[in-house]
Image 1 (tube, one colour):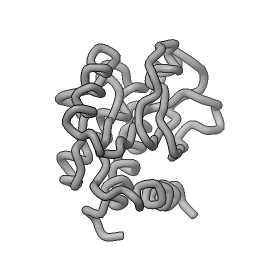
Image 2 (tube, helix red, strand yellow):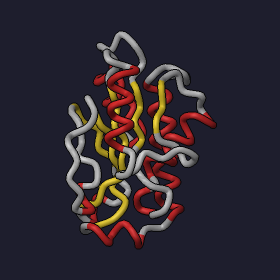
Image 3 (spheres, rainbow, N blue to C red):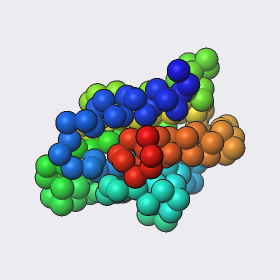
Length: 165
């Protein structure tokens, strides 16, 4: 099974019991290449796929460390029963670069950069963009992050039902 098929199957499994499309929270900054996975996914979902879900975090309106908690509060107020899919880049082992992880439960945004935020999301999708911690996000090629974002956005859109399965 290919990486995109794994993403699709995992997301479909996680959102199958949702009565409404998930709220998609794409976390990251467009100022650091290794951190722009989330905003690139959000941009693709909104502009290319017109996904049938609420999307927060795009290149034009990124959700970063500066506005993350405010955005989470807004989402809880605006979508109190909506399941949240958190999307973020990750730093990890060198052999995991370019791989995705989809899991039940939230993620800790900024953990790879030494930031401490509460766990966010009901389920999560990450892409490992670099090895190491912290400064590793600066040496990442935009082509890699962009390609990962296109794949992730396509599979998210397919999983929430806007594209044929």
